[in-house]
Length: 227
Image (spheres, rainbow, N blue to C red):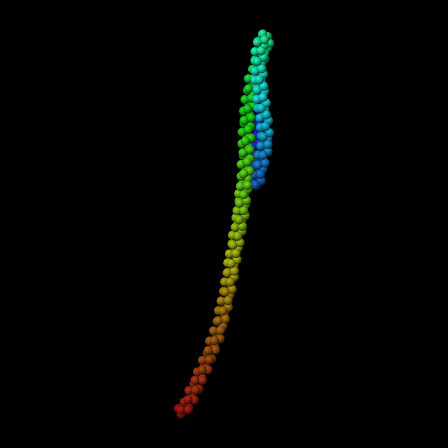
């Protein structure tokens, strides 16, 4: 059946096109639904048309059957009236209608099968659309969660970079402080050395002055004692 193949191709083309352009999942979901609904409208129209054909074929078949029945009744009445020629004509018409009935029966069977296939496609597509609508909000929520997680990961990478920069700054600060400490230590060493030289020199004279005073005091003591 051509209509079945055509709509399968339409749906397949839509899905493939969406998969090729799946850069934005939210837009893809909405576009997929719009495509399904567009296909559904076409399937619905075709289904209605084929169901109408089925009904028309059924009506023609029923009408033909009724005509066959009428021709049989007319033939009986003609025979009862003694009109064999009229009866023969009614029976000939009945035979023609019987042959026509076989053709109409086959047409009806085909129309019925086509109608059933279209109803199945209609119901399947309608169910798919309803299921997709039910899942749409859930899928969009998942997309939002994924986008939020991506942002968090990006911020985490930024924080890691900031942490690395802070650590590097601390190491630089420590290095500067060490340089200052070393400079202070060298200054202390230089100052201490100069002070020690002066102290040693002063001690020399301090020591000499003390010895001379002691000697003078000792000589005075001896003189006092008459020694």
